[in-house]
Image (cartoon, rainbow over all chains, first blue to last red; front, side, top):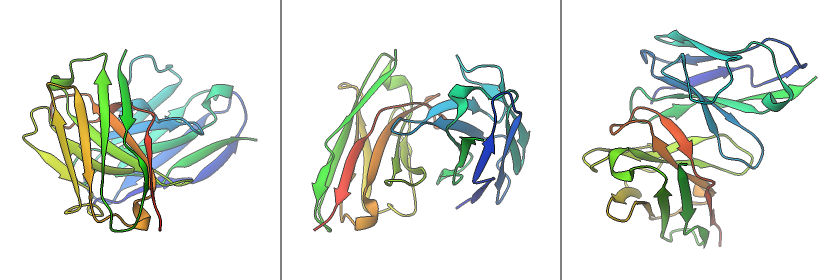
Amino acid sequence: AIQMTQSPSSLSASVRDRVTITCRASQYIRNDLAWYQQKPGKAPKLLIYAASALHIGVPSRFSGSGSDTDFTLIISSLQPDDFATYYCLQDYSYPWTFGQGTKVEIE
Amino acid sequence: EVQLVESGGGLVEPGGSLRISCAASGFTFENYGMHWVRQPPGKGLEWVSGITWHSGSTGYADSVKGRFTISRDNAKNTLYLQIKSLRREDTALYYCAKDRERWLQSIDYWGQGTLVSVSS
């Protein structure tokens, strides 16, 4: 199975900070990567699919980039609603695999 | 509005079986692939299984292959996961999720989950 290594596992940041989360695949996955946001006690929500396509209704401060094995999620100006855990998911080949998550906390 | 409502979870003894279901509404169910994803308490997400729109293709995580079976009834707008030979490590919140396409491309919407607990 393809291993997804997400970093950092957690970070502390302030409102209006620029936040960067990375995900590295253990092998080539083209651009078949999605990013999800999950808040405690809630189901995940799709932010980005196909590495860089913004899902409908997602604020433009979220952006994704990358291809092949290295991917990045950027929150350009962190807002109070963005404190959550973020996961990447490779949907290139079975079995699909998630990164271990990045918890974004208030500094 | 896409709605996915899971049901059928509960407390099961190790080695037992269970079938969980997902009732879908707010979209044309037969036109989309579907998935199950699970999350053990306090831990991360694990993709469990996926099925294409016409059940022509399925996929499974290595940890569940041979024990779990995904299926769907397009006439009833319902997704299923048959779980056998349950292990303690199968304890998790099981989410039903919709794919963006007929074939398995990526997950766009999630249900709220049904809890499966495996314990004696």
